Length: 588
Image (cartoon, rainbow, N blue to C red; front, side):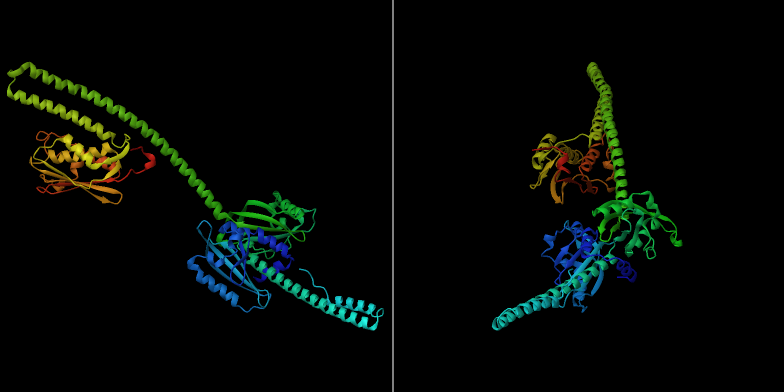
């Protein structure tokens, strides 16, 4: 305890009941341990912060709540305190930073102050205070004995000698017993008084070292709130308000804090003294003026959680904790919440606009395809009618030109259909269902009808997974049909295999075709890109673009491994299950 702090608290006599009340109302974590480290008593702040009740702590040591990395240092400090040879009534203290666990399994960083008091030759107590880091007078035994002696004196003249002797012996025995009882009472009272003094010193020491500000005001005149005068304080109070209180003792509340004249705080303090009931003032703002410090000449607003509680001798205790950091954090959180709400509102607006644009795009695509396909069909029909009308009189070169015309029309129609399909990927919701990949591949091969001499092998370990069946079928169908269509021999082969990669399956479609030059590996996935002339091999150049877009929409990827003359291997990854079961429809 600092010398100034001791002087401050010596100016008011606080009873054990007053200190016990402070123990209950303090926002600091307080507890009392026996010499084995077991908790004898905890205050509400202990339970509120760490989540352990008095019942839960009855058979536990404070050390059991410490962080594993801090237990050795904590035990060393406690052992040193217990081993100290302080005389009864004196105390020794230790200060250190520790971490203690709360009931919600979150660690709290605490600044601990633990003091040891020897209450008697055999009894010690540990008084612990922490905060989160950023008696009866004995009678005179001789008086009782004197009264007994007087009664013996009175009875001595009214009894026969034997009776007097017997009576005197009996009375002396009773007097001796009474004397010993009085001596024991005096010893116990003295011991209790010494214990109370030690506890009072410990409470005062805890008040001086705790990270909670404390003022004690005395109402000199019960009818005059302006007579509230400061009679005690602690170092934390001076630190919190940025003003030294050493020369403020004895001054009135309004002399020290003139701004309070416009508030109801003086009246609240006076009412606490008059009613004897504590009062929670809640959050109180205070402007700290740093003009007395040239290196830091500015004003700063701080926030304090303030509680007032009654004390003896027309006094009121005011405990306050600096909550500026938590208040600022709450304000920052509110700002972030407001920002998130704004972003969420913008996203909602954007999604609404995107949905509207998608609807417009679908409408445009439908109208465009209809308007484009209609004249294309007319051109195809017109060419067919001309061929039929001219019959055999049509020169061979014109027959070839009509065939080329019809092929171009069919290609144009294929391009339109491909564009529509490409634009719908990822926008048209599909249902997820159990898909047997082996059965799916059998259906695809049956629809493709490969040449009879062509060999297609399917590995026997194909999985069953939850997927969008139509999209997976589209990917396999495009890749397999490309391998058949672009093969340079009618007796080629295609092998389909699979392996697991974490949350994905990796499928491989390999062939022994002509291969693809590495320079064109990226080009083939671009829309409308082909490696052969469309007159040599009819193709829209959009199939692999659709495959890549479908796979990426499902969270997978596709790669190509190929060299000219060495065949090709298309590998793509596909999720084992839907990305979010709660957001899709599962069809069994």
